[in-house]
Amino acid sequence: MFSRYLFIGLGGSGGKTLRFLKRDLLQMMVDKGIEDPKIPEAWQFLNIDTPTNADGIELNHIIPQLEADEYEGLIGAGLTLNDVQGVIDSNPVFASELEGWRVNPQGITVGLSKGAGQFRAVGRTVAMYSAQTIKNDIETRLNRLNGDVATPLRELEFHLTGASSGGSPPLHIFIISSLAGGSGAGLLMEVCDIVRALDDSLGEETFAVLYTPEVFESLASGSTGGVQPNALAAVSEVLNGYWYGGNPGQESENLVPKIDDSVLEF
Image (cartoon, rainbow, N blue to C red):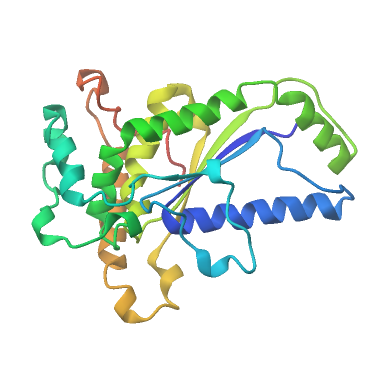
């Protein structure tokens, strides 16, 4: 049987990937003779990014943006990095999580409503600030996927393949992000941890598609100064999580547990 899917795109690269994926799925349905095709409720899309408004407007003439409720811009207009870090500082349980990488707002001039400015540490700061919002967004999609989605999915499967199987459709989660940018690479660890914290059994069904710096080779060198350092830091944190040997149960209930080897497939 066709599976249930939650596609989570992080940052600009993740969001653009979701847009192309939706386009291709709809085109597949058209090619199979479905008029006025629609994405089934069993396939959920969510783009999480820093900017108030979705990135990638340069592609609007060839591919539509995601639906409004499929985009979560974490930073409202006028909100500054100083504001964000003030909120984080008010909760002392975050102190140990900030050790070693905390950003000094005085040295950053990024307008957060436009993005993380290719500063991965800024993206991660936004992720910590927005953890509850991210949790709510993912939980909403999981609730939809746990609703009455099997029958329409079987009907779509029959139309596309000529066969339909019974049983409950399995659930798979794909997290799509660049390793080299600011928002996506900064959000990656927190989002993976939040998914597993919501349901530990989801770890074995969660997969990551991660873009390395080579995908930005077509850009001018002045636009890619941070991609290599960002990718190195992101990979280092992923491997640190992969090898993590502590006891997540000892952490504060306000923090999600560390990622383990069931979360990402390599």
